[in-house]
Length: 497
Image (cartoon, rainbow, N blue to C red; front, side):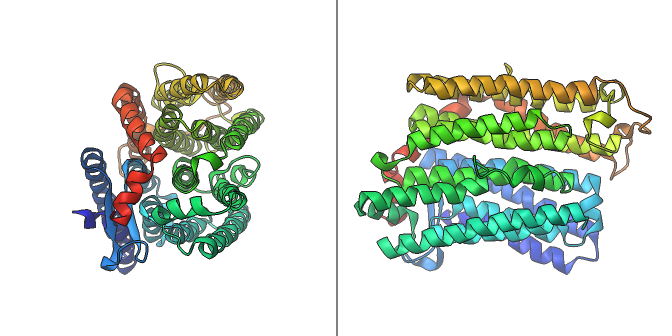
């Protein structure tokens, strides 16, 4: 059964090849893509149940045992991320089929989207640093194509910024790989867990900080976030949504995995991470307040909310890390929902600029509800999922005596609420700035906003389900956090000893 771990990576690649072969039929491409991601989601759900009940799943490519061969590993953390990412990728694909702008006008959308899905799954499941690098490059190649779909000058310019920064991170990652291999003779993460501890203290600390910088660029941490607010808003709405909700969390995943598995406890940069987390929260939320476009407000909030996840990691306690994992689950769903909603706003109002839209709540109450639910959750208003996740982080911070970063997180929550009310007042509750045409939400044929609304509504409902099931989800997160902070079990499963 362990060999099934490869399917979340292999199936999207096979699906991408099939989509290329049937490229003349957009209907066939849609069927293949949706069927592929449904299968991946089903496998991911089975995987998380099996891992939680029976322990870590490991497979060695070609039968070569670690550290010689390529290891694919699914522990609770990886399986959790795989489930959430599969659900988001499927929902965004359905949304794209409903919108048709990016999906219907470009024959390459479906194969590239599936390649992106394979890169995301591979990032979560790979057991060695070199294949993590390869997975990142697969995502980079696919995401560059997706972010420039449409070919406008603004998109190409933003895409170039995204690619240049990503290539810089890749160069630094290669340097880190070279240093690591030269010093230890391996890149298998389970094997490195023991070998890095044997290195001189200075070299261990330098490697840890270098990995934080590499993955921090991809996660948009302060001060490495500057590329994100200009890159994401110019892309088509489905692309922006999947980038905003998912891709930065791959960077967060890599930071958590590397800091807990590779870096010995005495050398973990807890204080550095807490300072970076606080600055990331503040810079992101202040940037959001200063914006007057829905997508740009939400883009700066990606940066701000990443700070909460790093805060939980920086505590290096089971409670703190469990809060961070729960926050990741909540944020991927909520942020994707908000960006899909912003796409519906643009589709209906013709623009996302707050000065040019208004009165949406009166004309389209369904759209208003789809925005309000995740917006309140993002701000941490009870009883939504964001409140539960922030409460877990605040409690862990207080227990650890980190009062300053806890205070900053609470202040940032208030500013987040303020920026959400700014969007609500300008776009939904304000005066209408002209006739925006027919209420497209209620049209019923395929390709109209009804399909887009269905995909957005499903994620909004899932965010409510997360709040309802927060108890079991937090307990699962605690078990995953305990695994991460005690990596001996991970090493034993991978190395077979």
